Length: 191
Image (cartoon, rainbow, N blue to C red; front, side, top):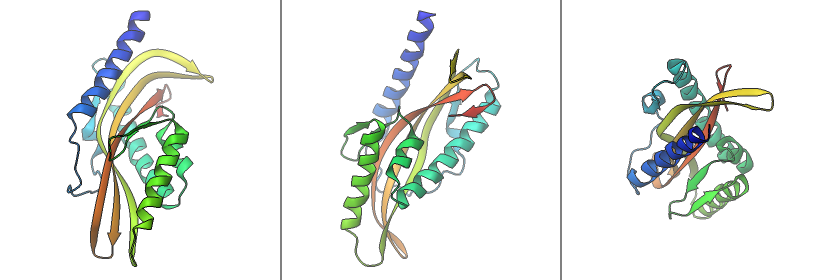
């Protein structure tokens, strides 16, 4: 049992390190569009029970979460942004600073929006977009939390783009990255 816990942590740390160090640092000039096929960026570990269903459900959750994150940011609901990302989320700012914990993540988004809005000129606005880089699903030893049984976990890395826009075009794209973890309940819902 201890070996499985250590191997789980090894897989997690290796995955996060790979995604962090192998991702491009500056994609400011990249054309930012909605991720039309999130499912292609989800990898399932061998031996995962119900891999197709878990992959499809995770893609649905990620897509809905990204929509919610953009809406909450627009409405200045920064704690809601932090809650959607979750307690285990890590954000890497455009300057390379690492932000962890819900309160610090909420403050980060508040600071980012305030700074961007101070630089706005007439007719401009700020928009936040998320794009999945990669997600990885693996089974874990079943655990019970709050009466619910969880059997899998997903590790997800994403890019975020804070875009200053004006009617007719994009003026500035500030990007960073992050990662988070989701747990899969036996009834096939991701949290």
